[in-house]
Amino acid sequence: MGKIKRNIIVTSCWLLVVFLLFYTRFVGLDWGLPYPMHPDERNMAVAVQNLRCELLNGHYKILNINECFNPRFFAYGQLPLYLGYFLIWIFRGFSDFGRMIISFNQATIVLRLISAIVSIFSAIIIIKIIKIITGIKKAKIWWWLIVIFSPFFIQFSHFGTTESLLMFFYLLLIYLGLLFLDQKINLFYFLKVSAIISGLALATKVSSLIFLFLPILILIFSSKEILFKKIFLLSYFLSLSLIIAIIFSPHNFIYWPNFYSTFKYEQAVALGEIKTFYTKQFDYSLPIFFQLIKVIPSAIGFIGLVSLMGFIEFIRDNKKDKKVIFLIVAFLIYFLSIVSIYVKWTRFLSPVFPIILIFGILFLEKIKIIRIIKFIIIIISIIPGIAYLSIYQNSDVRFEASKWIFENIPANSYILSETANVVDIPLISQKSKVKSKNLLEKNFQIFSFNFYDLDQDVKLQRDLEHHLGLTDYIFIPSRRIFANYTCFWPEKRNIFIDKLSYEKKRCEELKKTFPKLNQYYENIFFGRLGFEKIKEFTSYPKINFLGKTILEFPDEQAEETWTVFDHPVIRIYKKK
Image 1 (cartoon, rainbow, N blue to C red):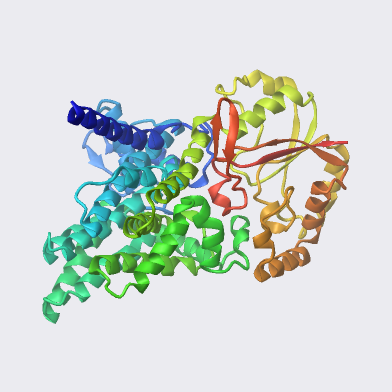
Image 2 (image 1 turned 120 degrees about the vertical axis):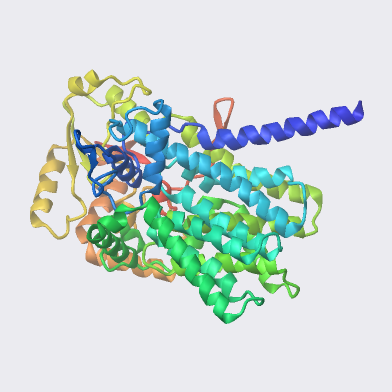
């Protein structure tokens, strides 16, 4: 009976793990809809809607090959768009292929569904990688819990973008490399499958060219092969990768000028050659340091610190396992090629986030510590992910703010808001029980003001004075302007960041370059403009118990895109 009872407990635990894996990826997958809260997701969803493949001439059944399934969008490849289209086609019972009319909601949901499904497969690959490196045949439940409750996995599962796919492809390349090093597969098989995966990655996003270096390095340092054979295999690998990329993202090549033009623009933005309003946060940012302070803590949590200790320990280890060396190389190839560029968005590091997790788990597996201490570390490591789920378990913060606005701000109020947020509040949502007639009845006069050009445009300065004279309420719908163009915050900032020399220099330059904008936000936050803050809406990752918040992780000061798409902070000021 004892053995049966134990088996029941173990089975129940594993069933719970499976449930948590699926729940964390799929809960609240419809967040924010029907509004386009994420700009990249919006662009991809619209591209899915653009996919058509109708007959050019119904009588002769001729297809216009150039226009067939042309998304008219070249910032990313066509693979995720085609996946989304085919899933919708399947859900509709295999009808109207090439002629489907797809709604924005359908396109968005299916893109998020792809991210969630791929995230599950990525979790499985991570566990397989850990098993290969440690030699442990049966995965441990705490491995799974750390992977399941990683904040970056949870967020990217809920974004219909390319991050989940890119993480999955890079993990697959690492897994194949480890199988080869473990002599489970031969070199030719490794290169063939790696070429297919690399091609699919290229068909997802062209920046995944970096991925190709991983198989190439294994080929170069494969001691058993002669030089001539290595050259042949290299040609085979690159050719097959290119063929797969063309097959699954053909319009990048059919419309090469459009693709190349988009690529050059995106590259110029990434390198800082073109400055835009949404990249301002990266001025004076320090490579590596920025990621360590503003990206990794929020995306990975406490396990990131454990991973850093693990990485240092594995680097120092004199008896390095070749599989660990390969993992270190896989991390450095991507990490070092990305961290030094001008833009440092969280999503740019997505392919190496799983590797960081792996380092943390391997380190906890390796070190000899008291069980209770290890247990505490594991609990602390999964808490941020548990808290992050609250964002998708609850109504979107913009809907909650909108509901309050309709209920508490008087009709005909004059409201000054900010431009260049993805959507403008207040929003109509069935979930928040706000009906469309409320917007008409309230008759708010809302001005979405262009603060970005305030210092360069004298007319805008006069317009601002005019609006402030009439304004009853001021909305600050996110941190996108004040956090990137000033050093003034409504609340106390991270003291550690304030003391950094580069941050002090940044603040001085911002005050010098944008004096009017700095003065405006300083006056608002310090109550000198004649307005007082009456309401603040947040959706920080948090853990509630019996209706009370027992733990909260304010993360507004993290890298901007980590918060502004799915849980921005909204502040409302009223004229005194």
